[in-house]
Amino acid sequence: MKKFWAWGALIFGLLYFILPLVGMTNFSLKMRRGVYSLDAYAVVLGDPRFQETFTYSILMALSTIVFGVLLVVPTAYWVRLKLPGLRPYIEFITLLPLVIPAIVIVFGYIRLYNTSSWLPLTGTTTGTNILLMFGYSTLALPYMYRSVDTGLRSIDIATLTEAAQSLGAGWTTILAKIILPNVLVAVLSGAFLTFAIVIGEFTMAALLNRPAFGPYMQLLGANRAYEPAALAVMSFALTWGCLGLIQLVSRFQKGAQSPA
Amino acid sequence: MSFLNLTSIQKSFGPVQVVKDFNMAIEKGEFVSFLGPSGCGKTTVLRMIAGFETPSGGTISINGKSQANLRPNQRNIGMVFQAYALFPNMNVAENVAFGLKVAGRPKAEIDQRVKEMLGLIKLDHLADRYPYQMSGGQQQRVALARALAPKPQVLLLDEPLSALDAKIRVSLREEIRMIQQQLGITTVFVTHDQEEALSISDRIVVMNAGKADQIGAPAEIYNRPATRFVANFVGTLNLIEAKVVDPASNRVSIGDQGVTLREPLGNVKAGDTISLALRPEAGSIAADAKGDTALTGEVISSNFLGSVIRTRMKVGTAVISFDMFNSPGLVPPAVGETATLRFTATDLLIIRD
Image (cartoon, rainbow over all chains, first blue to last red; front, side):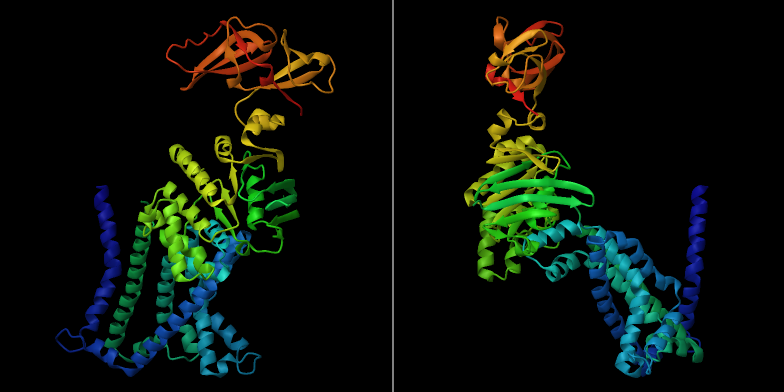
C-alpha cells in the first residue's frame, strides 16, 4: 500500500512537470497546419537575430565564466587557507545576488557608471559589455562560489600548498598547477550553471540594451505564436544539456578519486 | 659552526607560548629526531625551519645563512608530510618532477633525476600511477623521492610514518635511514614514537612543553635520562621513591631494604627522599640474591606479552615491574609468591629534577 502511494506521488509529480513540456513541444511542432513539422525550429534557427543574440550570449557566458573563475578560485582558496574566520561573511556576500533583484543591481550600475560618472562604462559598447559581464558574474556568484568551495573542501589545500611551497613553487604556480586542476570538476559545475544563467538572463541585458538571447526570446514571445515554443524547447534542451554535463563530470570526479 | 643552527627559538600563538628558548645545532649529514608527546612544540619547530611559521624570537640559519627573510619556497628544504600530500592530479613521475620543473631545470635533467629517484625508492615500475592507485607506504616513498629530487639542503620529515600500519612503518623507517645515509642529507625527523626515534637517529631531542629536555644519542637518552619526563617518556621505567640513609656511602632504603648506589647522591642529607629509576629489563629473578643490589617483594601480577613476561612486585610502598625473556621452560613467579630481583648498582639511576 505504501508503495502504491509512493508511485502515485511520483507519477503525479512527473505529469505535473512533463505535461506542460509535452504540450509546448507538441505545439512547437504544429506550425504547418495538419502535420507535425520542424518549421518553427527552422524559422528560429534561420533568423539572423537568433544567430546574433545566441552568439553574443555564448561569448558573454564564456567571458563571465573566465572572469568568475579568476575571481572566485583565488578568493575561495585564500579564504580557506588564510582567513577561515571570514568564511561566513564571504558566504553571506556571495548569497546576496539571490535576494537582491537583478533590476536593482543593473540600476545601480547605470547610476554609477553612466556617461557623466567618473567611470563612464555605459558610454561605449565595450564598456557596457564589460559591465554586463560583471553583472552576470554577480548573478552567478552564489553558484560558482559554492561549487568551488565544495571542491576545495574535498582536498587538503593547506598541506598541498605547503608541499608545493617546500618544492619551490610560488602562489601563481600553486594556484595554476595544484589547486585549479584539483577543483576543475567543481569549477566546471559552476561554469555550466553560469552558462545556463547567462543564456536565459533578460533584465540586465535588456536594461543595458545589449543584443543578448534573453531579450530576443522575450521579443519573439511577444510577436509570434509557434517560434517562442520552439525557442523555449531549445532553451530547455540547452539547460538540461548543461545539467547533464555537470552530472557527467561529477561522475568522472568520483571515478578519478576512488581508492586503489 | 654547525650546518643547521636554531638559536633561542621562541614561538607564541596569541598568549600561548608553544616553543620556549629552543637551541639546537645540527651537523651536516646528521639525522636528528624531535621526540615528544602531542603539543610539545616539535612540529612547530620543524615548521619554523621550513618557513611555514615565523619564530616570535630567535634565529634559524642553514649553512651559515639566516633564513629569517626567506619564504618557504626560497629555502631549498625538502619536506615529507604525515598525510603524504602527493598532488592528486599528477602521476608518480610528475609528482617527483614537480620541484625540478618549478626550478626550471632542462627536461633531460628532469627525466634523468626522476628515474634516479624512482630507482632509489624502488618504484620505477609505478611511474605512471596516480596517488589514488597506490598504497599508503608507496605514496609516502613517492613523497620522499619528490622531496629529495631537487637536492634540498635539509630534509624535514613530519611524522611520515604515523599513518601507516605497523609492518610498513618498520620497513619504511629502515628505508628512510638507508637513503639518508646514502645521500648524506641533513635530516630532521619529528615523531612521538620512541621506538622510531631510537632506531634511526644519530641524535634525539626529547621535547617537553616547548623546551628540549634532553639532547643526546639514542643510547644516552635511553640509559641516562636527564629528567623525570625523559625517563617516563622514553621506554618503560620504574620510578621508585627512596630514602637517603647515608649520603657519604651512597646508601638509600627502598621500603625497609637497603641499597647502595654507584652514582654519588649529591647534595642531600640523611632522611631526604630521592627518585630512582630502574628499567624493567635491567633486573632478573634470582632466588639466592642478597645484599646491596637485590630487592625482595611480593609478586602482585604476571603478564605474558609474547617475547617477554612482565611481572610486578611490591617492595614496601613501591611497585616495581621487571621483564623476563620468554622461553618454553620458563615458569614465571606466581601471584602472591615472594621473589627477589637482582640488578647491578649502575642500573639504578638517580632522577634529579
